[in-house]
Length: 349
Image 1: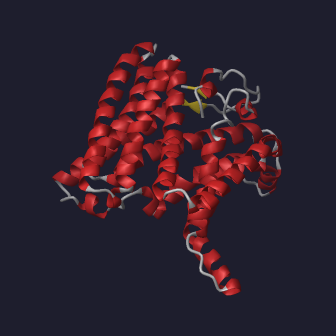
Image 2: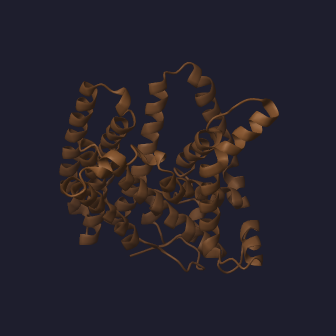
C-alpha cells in the first residue's frame, strides 16, 4: 500500500459498505509496549526464560507463520489471481517478474555471492514492511515528500541493519555485531529527531500518534535486538505489517462481493452458504496451515517415490519464497491510485 491509497480515498465504488479503520490499525502498535513489558518481566520475574527459549526469528515458529506470516501473502495472491480482470491486467508484469526471479535466483545464485543475494532480499523485505506503514502515516499526516522520504530512508536503513544483525548473528564476528549496533543506534537517534521535527505537519494528535508509532516500531526493534530478544524484535513489525495488509484484503473482497459474487470463488462459497467475509480468511489460513505443516513432507514423499530424489523445503523455501517475493513486487503497484483495487477501498477513523 502507498500514501496515494490513502490521500485519494474518495474514488471508490458507491457499493462500499466496509472501510479500513485507521484507529484499528493504530491499535496494532500496542504490540510495541507489550513486547517491552515481556522483555522486562522476563528479566525481573521469569529468569530469562523467554530469552533462552523463544526462537531466534518468527520463521522458526510454525504457529506464527500460520497465523501471521504466510496467510497475508497467500491472501494477496488469491485476491490477484481469483479476479480475472486483475490477473489479465497485471499478467505481463507477473510473467516478467517471474522470469527475473528465475534468472536471479537460478542462474544468478551460481555466480553472485550468498551475502549479496541475502542482503538484496533483506533490503526488499524491510522496505516492503516499512513503506506500507509509512505510506499510511503519510496519508494521515499529509507529510511533504522530503520528510516522508527521509523518515522512510532512515527507518529502512536502520531496520536493515537490525535485520542483518538478527538473522546473520551466528555468522558475524563480535566486532561486526558491535558495529551494527552502533550504526543502527545512531540512525535510530536521527530517526527520532526527524520524527520530532516532522510532527509539526500533523494536523491532529491522532496524526502525531500514527507518525510516532512507526518510529517507535523501529526503535523498539533496535532496543530488543540489543537486549538479544530477537524474536520479539521482529515480532512487532511483522505483526503490524501483516495484519494491516490483511485488513485491506478482507475489506476489498467484502466490498466487491457482498451484494453479488463477482468471481468463481465467491460464487462457489455462496452455493456452500459461506459468508463472503469468511472466504479469504478461511482459504488463506487453511492453505497456510497445509503448506507450512505438510507441504515439504508431501513434495519430498512424491519426489522420492517417483524419482528417487529428496528435495528439502521445496514448499516452505521454494514455493512460499516465490509467493513472498512476488508479493513484495505486486504490492508496489496494485494499491496505487489508478489501480482497480482502489474502487473497493475506503478509509475511516
